[in-house]
Image (cartoon, rainbow, N blue to C red; front, side, top):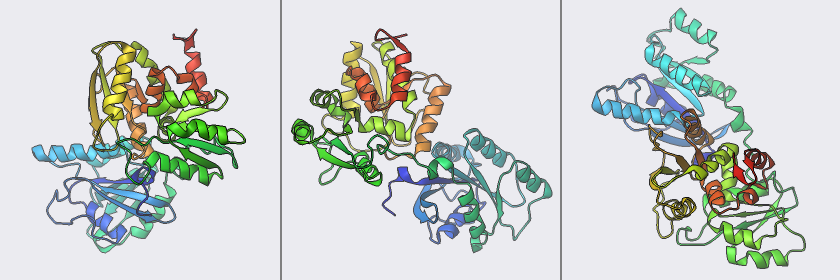
Length: 414
């Protein structure tokens, strides 16, 4: 369970002012010394992550954050670090002094309500003081669950677990499938896995592994080949596969070797649907038509691998988009959880498959792009569009394909 990828864990963010007991709460709940506890306000500086198994929920990731009321130049940097956690929080825990509820706590409630994130309030240090009738009435009227606790003594942890179980988002409990709905039980998918300089020695990359597991969980099976062996593999089968999935970098060769009668897509497009919003990414890819030389394009990667050789995000996608546009574009690259505060200068954002992100993190970025009318797409969708095989790559997804066709006429976007 400790090896479950972060992207598949329920992200539980712990927020509040300095010295209200956030770190004590995390240590008591996990029964481990995860965060440093001190009487000095502001002890927690950078977010502290603790993965664990919390039954009956399963794999979770607790994130302890710096005080939202931190002050000074360094304090402001810590607060910005805390605010970055908002976008990937599935359940928010607001820790407050039992007798104190004010501007900071209200802002946190509003922030997470706007994001449609469940909130649980921990009224801590209840041995020293009790919450006022006004605070209790406020929480009850807003239907915000709360727990009285003495985190330093481990009191209130059982009650918190019960509230957490009640407030796990439905979309986490009923997580969708990566490819299982596209390959009926007893049928086969062929997974095309190029082995290049960036392929990790001795193992497959995470999206490939997760797709294999997803197919097995849905009582399907798969054949894994390199792009050069695909044609022979297809010819050796007694009946065609239900689906061919390729690494997006090999799209053109795989499309050429796969008969039109067999649905074809890429791992990245599967994850565009699984982790994000495929129709939004399809619409974003159409913005490639509007790109002009000199336009700014942001390429965003969730992981922080060291790029070598023909890196897909730094070399191949810029090359394909530049060829499509017919002139040089201004590319910028970011990695990890860094994301620009101001995205308005970008004419397009191209995001990776986000296999290491939880779904909430990617959806938060999509929402920000929507609010500012900045087109966003993902690697596989952008590659398919720029290489001229868009409809073929969307063929397994009738809804997304129909949305695209409605916006085109005679092959041109209206």
